[in-house]
Image 1: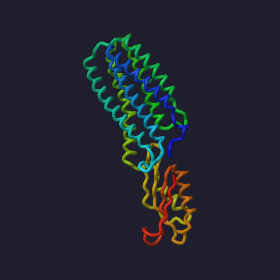
Image 2 (image 1 turned 90 degrees about the vertical axis):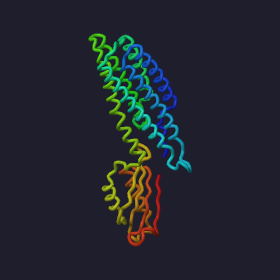
Image 3 (image 1 turned 90 degrees about the horizontal axis):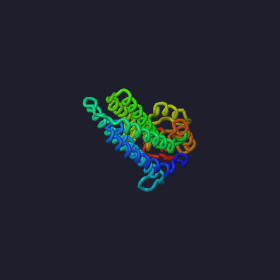
Image 4 (image 1 turned 45 degrees about the vertical axis):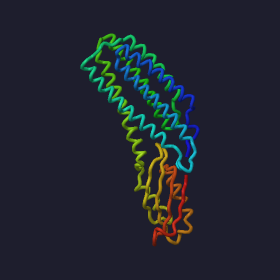
Length: 299
């Protein structure tokens, strides 16, 4: 159940992006302090959170490549989900804090050193372009890599916003544009963060994935010798691996020869519903369900 190697980004690229983002963070934070630009400071926090995101993505990828063992029978796939939840929660709190500070600056504006703000944003923009290039996902890249890439892409857009803001302040002296940009960046971060928190919570709580269970039951019932389906339970190991268990009743006369029925059900669930791990319990149509059952596990 490990990720194919084609979906894995090299550790060197992850580490390069982390170091580059930390350098950008320090530069933007110092630039924000000296220039008085809140949008530059907010982008520094954004870059720092993305450094943590990339670091956790690297750790999660390394853990996810570990094989299953007696204690972790499904492997370490949930490590990525935990890191996504913690990182998104931190980003949510940072966005709310920066929005609060931006509202204060709207009512009590302060002077902004436009030249420092502009050139630091330019350097940040170039650095973020390099980061997005290093982690640019392929078509078969994991969701972890794609999500990290989107975070870095949002950094690039935020730096571009600071550049535009500094130009507006320089020519039109509209200092309120700086906290306004901070609010807009924070809103954008919230729109990215909340869905990730919701999805990661659902996976950690083992909520049922979005499958058409009624249609699945109908499809299984149409298979020869199947007389009923019940106790369907599904959950996700991560964003792309679904685990499913179900009980299937078959004709009493076919109970001992149910291998073909099991294979047909397995192919149906794998091919149509893309379930990666399914456990099927075969039960007799009549009599006690506690007797004469057969188990089939497919990974």
